[in-house]
Amino acid sequence: MAKTFYITTPIFYPNAKLHMGHAYAVTLTDILARYHRLNGEETYFLTGSDENTAKILKNLDGKSTETYLEDLSLNFKDLYKKLSISYDQFIRTTDKEKHWPGAIEMWKRLVEAGDIEKKKYTGLYCIGCETFYMEKDLIDNNCPIHKTVPEKVEEENYFFKLSKYTADIKQKIKNGELSIIPEGRKNEILALLGRGLEDVSFSRPKEKVPHGIPVPGDPEQVIYVWCDALVNYISALGYGRNNSPQTPLLQSREGLPETSLVVREVETNSPSELFDKFWPADVHVIGKDILRFHAAIWPAMLLSAGLPLPKNILVHGMITSGGVKMSKSLGNVIDPDELIKEYGSEAVRYYLARHISPFEDGDLTLESFKEVYNAHLANGLGNLVSRILTLSEKYLEKCPDIPEKSDFMEYFKYYENFEINKAVDYVWNEISELDKYIQETEPFKVIKTDEEKGKKLISSMVLRLYRIARMLNPIMPETNVLLKKLIKENKAPEAPLFARK
Ligand code: MSP
Image 1 (cartoon, rainbow, N blue to C red):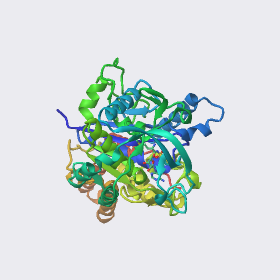
Image 2: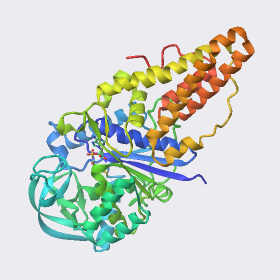
Image 3: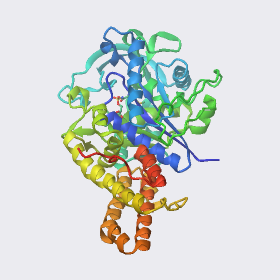
Image 4: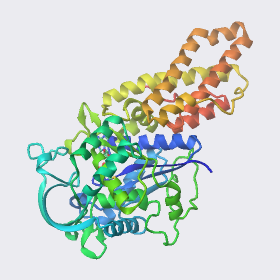
């Protein structure tokens, strides 16, 4: 039986269009998913939207909540399609059939474990973060992330006994049972756990979020918001709906361009089969701002419910623009749609994969993008492809025999370590080596004096180019397919692969 691999993105708040920060998270996850498929693993890739939030209520603009959310989730999916994101399922937390049973089941388990308690509470609530803050955590009375004054809230809420699980989680993170990557983030969460965890509010009064999931047995309260959102990782696999009628779960990969390597599949697994097969998750990909929720609250919920913990949490940094975090509230967002329109989605994927480190903050400006595009895509890869394929079309009768397999051990190791940027460095290193080889051996001259030798040289270059095309599979899936096709047809591209800007 093939090894399985389950990977997730955070589910995004649908209060605005996605920006490059979000595009980074899904692209990083997509690259990892594509690598694991390439490696022969049965891979499941989940993404979605976090819809039961009060954030959206002031954006409705006359639309019903339902229509507003529907439109925004379509907008998310549209971007995913443009970026060739090969997700298997897009879960929406307003989905009563797919998500709600899981959230309700989880709630019941937490109650059964004696970990839910109702209390009157006064606290400082940041709607941006969807979380309560302690006074000591504020900076100049402001939320440390959104720089806004949190709202003073006095409510009767259900609380989850997070404090009960602190020691256990700390132990599991320390011994690697729950691995937090990179090391710096692991230390950060261990320090937080070391200071002890407060119990957290897991519900809000219904009038605050009328479209939320009612608390079982108390219709005046809704399950809120992390308790609801985090469960998506298992509700999507069928947790809580074991006896429900079986509906096909796989709704995506449909719509991806034909050239994409992803094969359309028909989902035949029942929801509980998916859960049995894929839980615990191999990797939750998250941004550093939601580390606490994923590495403390989520494991505590799973422990309370008697479920296994995810294996890895990969914590990426923030995309900054000109050194400042890209965020809608700060007004410095770069719209992925615009970059895609100007440069194409493969270039966007390339930039995110190579020029942003998966472990640290990374900067992106329109200027840096253009520079990198011209240097590495128009000149680097694009140029190399034209040079080699022009020669081969002219001097070879057909494409040389392509070996069925190549050795990618060294290259694949980077993916296993989540070092996506280094994986791309590795490919571009091969590109420049091949470039150098052309310059040194001058096949365009040799072919005129010694045809046999010239042909041999060109053939070897075509084969090296094919190897490069293969390696591009997880990073630039469209280029991977196109390049392999051109090589096999022994044809130079009619127009440059990446036109100079
Ligand atoms: N809905 C919650 C997540 C629930 S997961 C069970 C949420 N949504 S969000 O839309 O605000 O953010 C989703 C992800 O986008 C987070 O991982 C966050 O780190 C990431 N990013 C938001 N801005 C970002 C950048 N500027 N750069 C990189 N990632 C960024 O939090």
